[in-house]
Length: 103
Image (tube, rainbow, N blue to C red; front, side, top):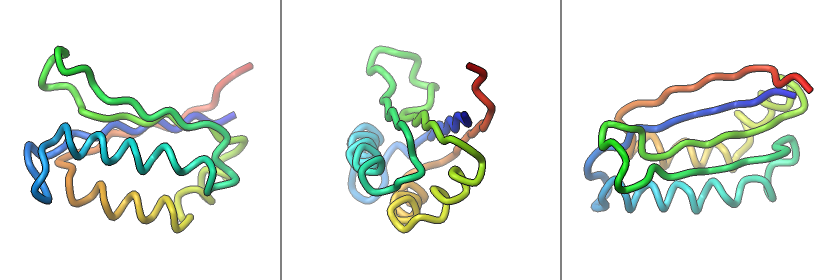
């Protein structure tokens, strides 16, 4: 199984919303992806706690796929592309790791 973890640092304000508001909007979009993308086996979207270190990333997603081919299919899926268009407008940086999960 392949695990795909992405973290986003959001702009303090973008598109007329705060970073927190954009994090909530991003999570709402992300939560719809498993029903739309067959290769996506599991997705957890999480928002950093308000009381946590403010230098933390605001939102992260943890996704599971059966294979790299499935991850590749996710990357080009229109629903993922739509999320990408949204998040690119509100983020200042992104970090990602893909790794194999051993049973």
